[in-house]
Image (tube, rainbow, N blue to C red):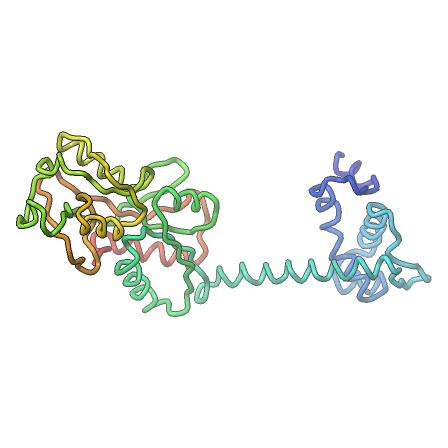
Length: 316
């Protein structure tokens, strides 16, 4: 009843935009169809709509706008000047809707669709290119929209519908998300090449308790893991520098500004030594996450299945 009452009032300049859209949107295609044929009966037949429904829609549209869009000539119609003005905008709007519909159908296509895939910066050099290369051996035309970010930012983009899947660490544990562990990656203590520990191959993390640390900023998964592993080793890291990217931290270590707990690099970095941590166990889990309850398009479902099949052998 509320809709009927609102549809009977004339729209004013002060009308809320959402009210205008709700009132006008269902009738725009009807208006465009009649404007094209200039005949209600012929338009109703072409659009497979009862003539009475079409006539009522046009009358209500003109009533809502407070403007005559058509001049009546028996069974035929012609656009008024206001109708011509309105039609130009309506056709643009309907064309944009059609383009949007074509785009989302194309993205969902089984063979040529798109996957919006997020991943950690540290997985971007080797891991993700290798995964996509292997996946496209069987799905050569599937397209990818790739996003690199830290874990929490990617999870928010999952929730916002901007990503289909993401590789992250730690594996999320939240009621609105699904997370699956795929692999784990050993972390190394990275020290300057001239550091007192640099000649060692293995080290207990407690041996670096008095060192300044360079770490990722709070909110990054690797930062939480670093803090937790150091706490397990019996100390709180003395943070000298915070950054947003692992290779930047390696550069700071190479410059002698501290030590860092980092995953192995894709390419060895000069100026540092990378030591195996024997105690405590220093690893980070890598997992895939997606939004709970969301229906996957065929290309997303295929890539998800592929990622899950790589459990235990995700990393190079």
